[in-house]
Image (cartoon, rainbow, N blue to C red; front, side):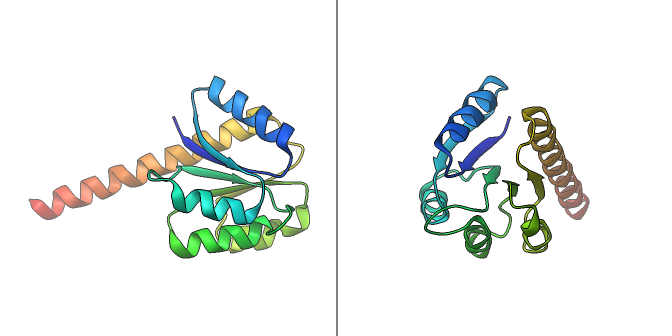
Length: 137
């Protein structure tokens, strides 16, 4: 299952997402309530999350700026936006988000997207392993 960092300024939503994701077997390795905190938390984590679930509109620093900063340091980071701000979808995706959901979204949709992202990662790892074996032979 996925290691997930949750970023949203709505504390109740963080708690709900955390509980539901953990019930489904995912490991919520941290949460942050604004973009600045997200960057700090991401940098401090010794084992990086498989997926960052990020809101856009937050105090201190918005999710788009935070995502760009995280991707600058760790280009392979996977950021999934879940935001009420539909107008930022295009910019988020063009800036490196792996997906975008408009709030409110069902936990079923969120779980399906997490599974899709993990499946893509698994397929990439298998392809790299095959290439490495081909080079060795």
